[in-house]
Length: 185
Image 1 (spheres, one colour):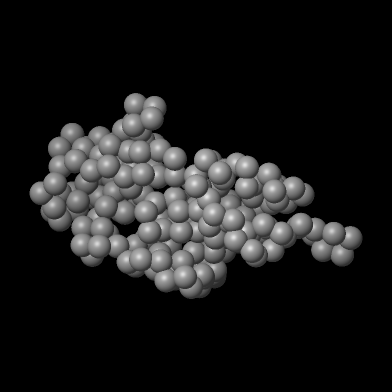
Image 2: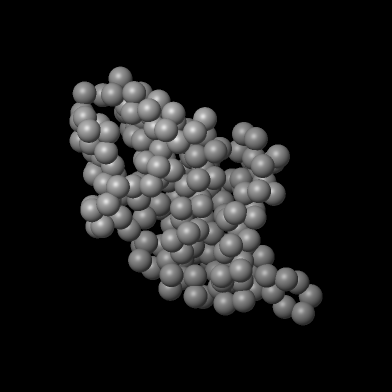
């Protein structure tokens, strides 16, 4: 399904679920104004339309919020991408598009990731050489870990998700949301 078709389907679904016409959603450090009457999503900080893939993620998030009435809170139980439905088969592509990018940027100096993530209110946790919890959307935390390499081992990284993400997004949406996060780090 292309972006145009996915967007139309998402707009149609959100309109069928709620009478509300305007929404505001924070994604990382940006706020998005979502107007279902005009079918427009604007970045408040830049006053520019959201990219199609970002719009789809925001609409899917709002759809689940409308369906569930309240999104599930984080459980504190972290899962690997491979534990998601279809995640094991898609993992090599996911790793290349997300984890490997983090390794290239921050693998030799994990502490620089903390500096990059500070603008997103990341919380440092004691895992590996660096562990960060970032909440790109309300109630959707990610755990990013990096271990520096040494003479024996190469640097390693991982991105984990709170188990509750399964109730909010499908695996494909999780990939796209993770790519958005990695892009902004």
